[in-house]
Structures are given as structure tokens and as C-alpha cells.
Length: 158
Image (cartoon, rainbow, N blue to C red; front, side, top):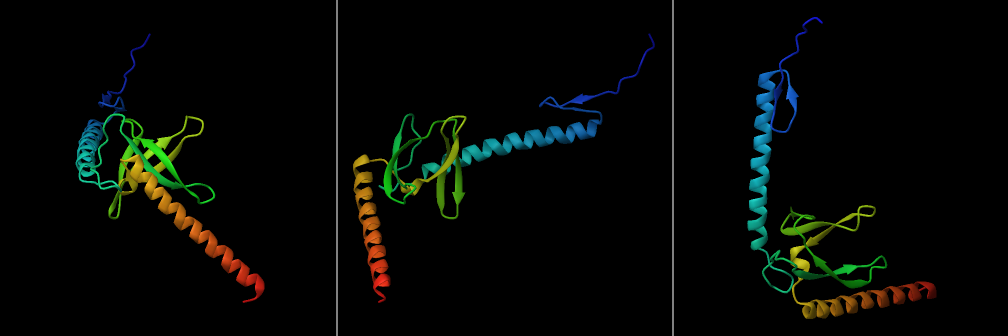
């Protein structure tokens, strides 16, 4: 059996192999930079959410098994109250202009969807959330009445 030469390979910490040492070194620098970036982003997000207040002016806190309430619109645009919890593995923090929101995956693996919850629209107190829901329902009802009145005027030719 003849001896065959195999190219020398360099393996990086993520298991990739390179034939060129400089290329492997550059890739390893990228891995290190990504890890440091992810750690810094996580630290920044933790500090950022600690500065946020909920809709009922409470400090936002991920807290274990902490429940929040949010007013959402159903498919018919009718306001409703939704209970949400943020578990450590299924959310991320995002900034949109002057608003910080928690983006969370919900549902099971066959029907998973992403939802965004602006922190300043979350309620700690269920009672205060229900009061806000009542106000939102009154506004929705007034809008429906206005729409009906406009349609009646249009049908009468006014």
C-alpha cells in the first residue's frame, strides 16, 4: 500500500476545518468576536429592560413566572386581554425607535408564531389591565357606532 500525503488541516473551536492556517485564524477571530458581541448584547439588553416601565408605571422585570397582561386586537379588531409570561429560552429584546419590546415565540413546533410585546403596553396589575381594556372596548364601540352612522348617512344620500 503506497503512502499518500494528506493535506494538513486546522480545526477551529466550532469544528470547521481549514487547509490554510491564516484562514483558520481569521475564522477563529470571528468566532471570538461573535461570542463577545453576543455576551455584550445580552448584558446591554438586561440593563435596558431594567430601565423600562410598564403601562401601569411599574418597573419591568423578567422575574421567574412573572405574569403580564396586554390588550390585543382579535381578528375582528375587538380589544381583548391576553396573559403573557416570558420564559428564559423563547424571547429576545428588540428596540424600535423609542420603544423596547419583547419578541416571543408562541405555540408548538407545528404552529409557532412570533409576537412582539412593547414593554410600555404591558400591565403588571390585572385590575389595571381590565380597566384599560374597558376603556379600549368603549373606544372600539364608539368607532363602530360612528361607522354605522356614516354608512346610514351614505345610504340616505346625505
